[in-house]
Length: 250
Image (tube, rainbow, N blue to C red; front, top):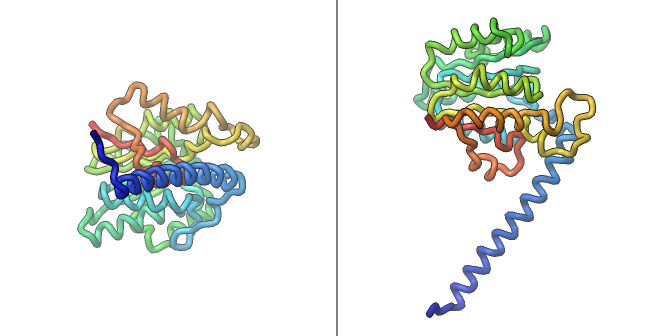
């Protein structure tokens, strides 16, 4: 027969309270995401002087992954203003100081690298670790160039953040996810689109049923070498990449 002491009852009450608090926090986090996406909250931030267009929570998550994985190549599709390229390069710089790969590089691909953005990126001190390719990330020519540059690398982390339609993201996954090293990640950004209200993106080609998350789930049906790392999104709670942190396990 179990004997319930006052201390065990209090302990149980604390666990229940924590669960209730966590559920309440999940609700508030979801509400914040819904409002903040429509208000372009991610446009508030920069990294070392360049607009990064990311949520602070995802920036911190990427810092953790980059330090754990210690990649010698980070591939990013979608450059925009270049803030993410600068961020990744600075993390590789810190990794090198901490004993990581000394020659680690960032490779960015974008269909349109605007002249003023290119000029600012090339003038940045972190550019010494960056290379950019202009062209469609899903064209055979660009895929070939990326694969050629990846051949000599041992530890690769992939970030997909360009056109957010289902077909485009799925094509990127088919083109680049296999470059991800075992134990590393292929991170697919803006999967949050699937979880937003249906009318959230009236002027965009993507929306519910046609977005990075639907592409991720389609890709995973035939690629058991990847799994969704739920631990990342569960601790962040506020993230634009739910189900988008894909860890390669084999």
